[in-house]
Each structure stands twice: as C-alpha cells, then as structure tokens.
Image (cartoon, rainbow, N blue to C red; front, top):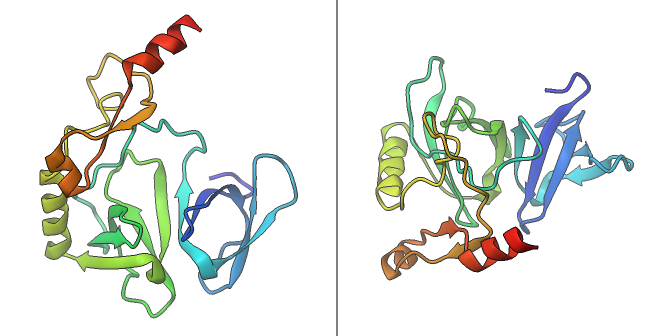
Length: 196
C-alpha cells in the first residue's frame, strides 16, 4: 500500500481495465477516483458498471503467473468462497462479508502468492457463488480439469525462468470442451524476437 493511496486494477463489465492509485474508495459510495500512472488528473469511476476492484501489490505483473484456485489453511473468521463471474473468470478466496446486503463484498485470494491483496467484488458481475465445503468442491472440480499449472516460473525450486507467453494455443479438443486454454510461446515469435 502506498502511503497516499492503494494500487488497484479496476475491472469493468465491458472488460475495460483501469490501473492506478485510489485514495477514496468506499463500498457505500457510488463512485471513487483512480489516478493513473500517466500523472493526468484522477479519473472518476462510477461503480455501476464494475465487475471488481482488485487491490494489488504491483502494477507490472508477469502475465504467465496465474493465481492458484485452491484452498489452504487460513486463520481468521473468513469462509471459503468460489466465485464464477459472468465473463467466465473464476476466483477462489476467503470472505466474511459475502452475505452483507451491499452491492458487493471483500474477498481475499486463496493463493497467498497472488498479486491481489484483496478484491471488492460486485454481485451483479457474479454468475454463481459457492461457500464453505461447496466452494472447496467447486475448486477441486475446476482444478481437476486444468492442464499443468502455468506458474512454473514463480514456483519454489524453479531455477529456469521462462519468457512470458505471447500467444494462446488450444491444447486439445477436450480442453476446448472444458474451456481450458494454455498459454504457450510459439517458436516463430521466439525466433523473431531473438533475431530482431
């Protein structure tokens, strides 16, 4: 957290993303402001078309790192929640405010190494949500259908750092049916980058 504000990645329902610092986000307000890196005047952000506000550790994130969507142990009163957004994104996390009557609630990511410290998720962006043991079951089902983890560069004991992937490639017809994609670096782009 910056002394003057919090780093955020604001995700809109139309898939737009606004990144920068916020100084005035409050769950009970209809808008807040984000000061983008460009140094321009802060942007007024109305909450009516937002999916979630991700309070993040850094603005520059390795795109090959994907949060784990499984639960470990956590001390505290929060319950496990599994969230499926209307755009297909899935999130495993912990929350104690998901049953509040507000338009949204705070979620802490299940992955302790996530770039996200916490998120404020808007209910209108959620297609389905599970809690407790049902959240754990949903995460297990999701993970059983996934290809190898995409996080090898960040995993402990990994000595080789892979370059970030630059293209999406469909792994197989089965993965297509499950909606699982894997990012891979195509040889042609790698050779162009190395020679250019």
